[in-house]
Length: 182
Image 1 (cartoon, helix red, strand yellow):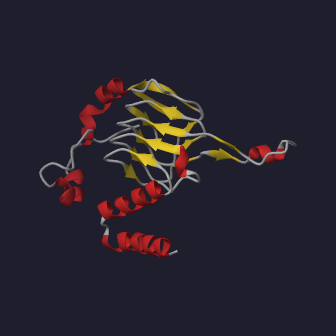
Image 2 (cartoon, rainbow, N blue to C red; image 1 turned 120 degrees about the vertical axis):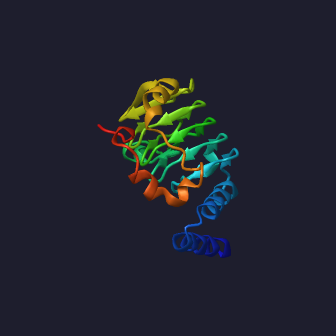
Image 3 (tube, rainbow, N blue to C red; image 1 turned 180 degrees about the horizontal axis):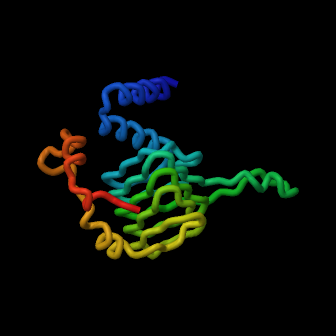
């Protein structure tokens, strides 16, 4: 109970101070204490999965906010069998990025260097890795190398030269050809 109260205070502290590193440490600690496995440099912006002990995450992974890691499905309760749920592990390899508001279903495995586009629903495994996924259901859109070539002229490094501190000024000074157009 005390841990839960401290975590709640930690989340409020983050909302007030903006200390992202402290907030992420708190979320990851909570995930690991509940049985989740993760490697180094894990950035965990989404909510805790229902069964964190069924989730394994590699090194250098970012999971964006609003993403759901579903390790169970309760729909079988309506199937006329004597069961309430089924479960599946979720495994995310190293050097992966899961975009905003994605859903990963029970039993999904993503190989190393997988990028999942925002809003995608991953209904099956892509263990080969080195791919960019998108859609509902998610499918392979291209390789990570193809994606890099397509986007490299748009990319900036906010961790260089103190740019993060003056982000707004820097971004609004960029030429139009460095901004994404759909």
